[in-house]
Every structure is written in C-alpha cells, then in structure tokens.
Image (cartoon, rainbow, N blue to C red; front, side, top):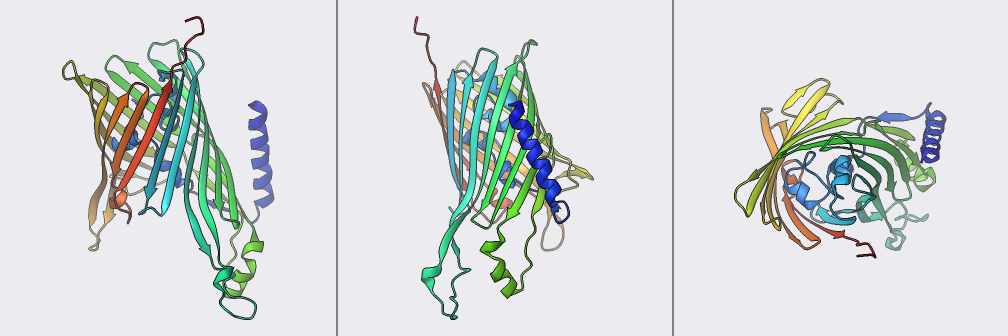
Length: 362
C-alpha cells in the first residue's frame, strides 16, 4: 500500500510539472460523486452520516463499515437520470476481518452511452455520408478502497477511503485522479453522531486530450483547442446527529439531521457566507419488526433568483420503502432532482445481501 501511494504521488507531481506552463486549474470536478448511492440513503434525503452502517457506508461514512453484521456484504444500485439518458450504477462489497475491523471496496459509474460522433460525417469531397458516423461514451468511474475500525472507546469507530478516479470522454480525452476521505462515528444508546471529511486532501484530476481525434475539425471551424488541465475538488465536511425512538414493541423510528459544510466560496445555500456555505439535510425512517421500512427526507435547500430576480427557496424531497427478508434487503427511492435540474422524478432501486459464514467445527 505504501508503494502504491508513492507511485500515485510521484506520477501526480511529474504530470503537474510537465503541464504546469499550459495547464488550467478548475476548482469544481467529480460532481458525479455528489449524487449518492443506496436507495435507502437517498430516500432519507442523504441524511445518513451518523446512522449509516455496513457496505453502503463506504460512500457515506467509512467509519460505519466496521458495524456490518455479516461476515461479508454485497450491495448494488442502478438508476436512470434525465429520462433514461444517463445511467448510474454502483456495486460495493465489504469483508469483516474481526469484530472490530472491516475492509470494503466499491465501484461507481455514471455515464451517457451511444453518443453520435459526426466529426467525419462529411467526406473529403464534401458529401454527407451517414455511414461515417461512429458512437462513443462519456463516463465517470470511481474506485473506493475502505478501511474501518472500532476503537477501544465503546461506541467509537473511525474509517477512511482511498479514491481513484477515471473519467473518459470517448477517445478525445481522459482524466485520472485520486483523493482521500476520513470519517468518524460515535453511538451512545439511542443517540448517534457522525462526521466525514470528504476529499480531505482535495481530490485532483489531471485531464489529457488526444488532439489527433479532433484537431483538424477544430481548426477548420475556428474553435479553440482545449489544454491539458488540472481539476481540484475542495474538501467538504459532513456532520450528522441521529436518534432512535421506540414507539411500541413492533414499531420504531429514526430521525437524522445533517449539515454539509462547503469551503469553496459562497453558494446558493440558505446559510452562506464567504468562503463557507452550509446545506442542511433531514431524514426519517419508520421500521416495522426490522423487516419493513418507510422513509422520507428533504435536502438540496437553495436560494435562487426567479424571473423577477427575487430570491426563491427550492428544495429536493424524497421518499422510499424497504423490505428485509433473511439476509436480503431490497430498497426503493423516489427522488425529485427536478427542482434542481430540468430532470423529472427518478426511480432508484438497490439490493444488498449478507453472507454469514460459519466455522467448519459448527
């Protein structure tokens, strides 16, 4: 692991040095990693930093990974965004080394496929030839490697992620990046507290363009050729507080309030002052016999200008259900990203399974 980190660091330094004269630095990148995974978490308005446990905590807070109940757990999610134009897929797995330590790995892909490439639509004689159309994909990939451990203090656990990023723009450009996340959780009877520093080291993406794919067309049309560039994802602090409630012997509930704290300048958040902005989240879950779940949440609070240039508050509601039977859990979420984009409601499904291996002696 140490040698891998050294290789990544040396490669990054060399690439930045080579391109430092012409490189452009962009502050925002890897927005696909802000969407989230797991239908159960998304249906609670992403308010899970304090209560997340098991394999899906790789994304939300790696400190919760050591709380996985089974020896091994696998989770999968698929979602269509923008009326099916974009595909979002996630798969994660966790392995519990002992009662206090766990490892995890997950892969995220967000992409748009079958995009027509019309750069060669017109041949050398000026004729339009549709047979010259090819297709390509624009896809973003993230590989997360996680470690979590329960400390000697009862209820306290920590965790971290190593993130490797690969972004593909067909044959035209590629980006390579890496970063780190750190998380902590503390559980005390009915109360849960959590914090996660996402992109703690800042996450760096290095873009490299293949000019041979489009240089001639860009010159003929008078477009400016892009330059190799460096993108930086600034750190973000996630804080959460959750509490369990016992309603009766069969019914219980959980409520969590989260705060996302950004350090990249004032945004449209309802709590904003340069250079910090704060976005609140709220989520709840009703549980029946630990087998049936009803969830809801709200997040994405923003102040935007309407047509009259007056400030208007918008937000993103969500809801969902879940069913757990033996070691299988199925979750569904309905999220309204339409208030934040032109997309309609999105239907999200996720599935997880726990493997409870037994000793051969038993």
